[in-house]
Every structure is written in C-alpha cells, then in structure tokens.
Image (cartoon, rainbow, N blue to C red; front, side, top):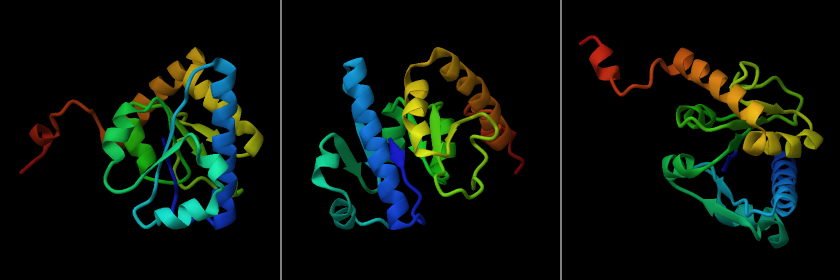
Length: 169
C-alpha cells in the first residue's frame, strides 16, 4: 500500500509513483510472484485527476482506493509506503514494515526512519532495494519489527486494548 502526502508537487508525485510502480514490477518479475500495489489516495485527492497524471501503462497492476478504507488495507498489506503522513504511524500500529520516501531533500517530517522504525528512501535508486528489503530480507524485517515495537510504545504506549483502564476519569 502507498499512502501519499497531499502537499507534494505534481512532479514529485509523478516521480514517486513512477519509481514505485516500475520497481514493484521489476521485483515481481524477478521473484516470480505477483506483488499488488494499492494506492490509497488522500481524502482531498481526485481520482480522475490522478488517472490523468499517470499513463495508463503504469496503472496496469495498481488498485486505487479512496474513502475510509485505510485500516482494512493496512490490515491486509505486507508493506506500507508513505511520504509524510500520520498513516505511517498507523501502519506501525498495525505492525507493518514501513518505507518512507523523501526525494525532495527536505528534513523528514516524521521521524519514523531516523528512529529505525521505517526504511528511509532519499534517492530514487534506493527505492527498489528498500522494497526488496522490506518484503524479503529477514534481517531488515526483524530489525524493523523490534524498532517498530519500541517506536509504537514510545508514541502510543502499550497496545494491549486496555488504554481505557489506564485512563483517569
């Protein structure tokens, strides 16, 4: 699943979508499995505008979701990708490996990658390697899981379903 940031420029978004889709297609062919990409549009993004921006050839293996579908998609995904979105934290809460993309040279808006809870991608040539590691590299997956757990505990405390019992009324 890819959850975009709404405030990127059109060129930045096109660059990210193109690199991501092409990387996933290459990996899928190489490992001979189908890797499905779901792009969850931001609530303010227009589906028709999105389809006009990218060539149809890039969208062959892509599903586009709108509306309030984030949690079911996160629940079923194997890897989440975002730029700068609180959906990154939600992916971590769902215990999913996370890749953050920042091709713009700006400081990361969220510290997911710098805290080791996500793989940070800062150059287009790093993208495919990051996807491979997030999906298939046992060391990366295990390291992310440990760091993800620590990050979630720091940011959202213990995820045991008993937060109401710990709350003072």
